[in-house]
Image 1 (cartoon, rainbow, N blue to C red):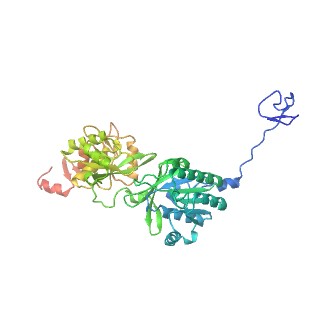
Image 2: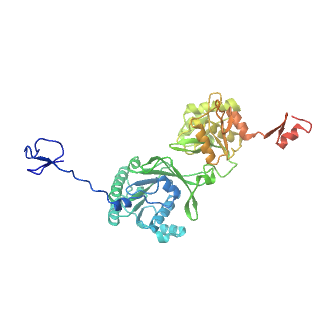
Image 3: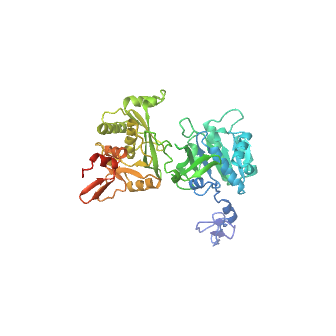
Length: 463
């Protein structure tokens, strides 16, 4: 840095004369101003705040980060408010200041739930029916470590009229500003539409630092996922919980092994397959529903049903017709008028072809697919099985999730198949429904260990 000894002007660039007094020969070199080192006590206060839930903390990469906004959306009755109440109680017990703004419940409801969960002595600071202006004023006054808003749709612009989408975006902007200003961690609960998709404006995702969707598993599990956005860590993570008398508790995905599958082992029209959703390699589930059982007012499903004997939810009509032709080729003239859906995937990809056909056959013949079976293959025009990308990774992940029967295509070249290999979809169906008996070789004689087959051969038949 240069300093003019005549007028005191500070100059950053190299000049021959002072830009202020235009004097020459008056600029001298002086040390630049040093930036102050950060206050370690302030940095420590920005450490992530744990939630008391191992799964929730894993999604958040360690906990709630001061200055960040977490958006959580879920269907009514899922248990999200119970879970968030437990999180707030855990943080209060560890000395954090928590402000809980709710427009969804009354004081008696909150107290009853707290008593049931045994957290009455760990209640956060509760505020009921606050509008955005009152919320900002209270946050500025109390300066909490954590702010919870349940829900943003319940915040009222006035005491009588619900918010428009424009007002909701404006509110979120105000919440973002106060969150950054006070360096607090903010958790915002949002509603869903009738189709269970996010009900708020798209801008919410941009304002948030972590965007979490909660859904119900087929066995009643509560599943938190962050497939789209996470500034605190990687996307594609998932946490699984179960509702109990003690509240919503963490469960390990491996605890059930088949948390996507229904409890009823006799149910038909279900088949599991492995897939990659964002960065997460996981098991998904195909569900087959008869078109005649669909609601009559569903114009989209009805119109598609008339055009095509098979409707893949989220798939193309061409793909539906292709799989229909494969079914007719290998299983005869079957009435395959079904709607096929994937539980988690936005659309059914070709890598789920084998699982789709197995689920349909399960529905047609009323034979349930074993819970331990998972299918990994696409099919070609003749119904032969084709390998999918990352085949070995998918097989390994399936085994880690508890699937003991992995069905897939024949190995290629010198490849070793660490799965039940088959050539066509018909071969797989036969393997699933008519397991081959174990065979033992003794010299030149072959003996089947299955007693039924031995009895059919007769005592004098050697083979």
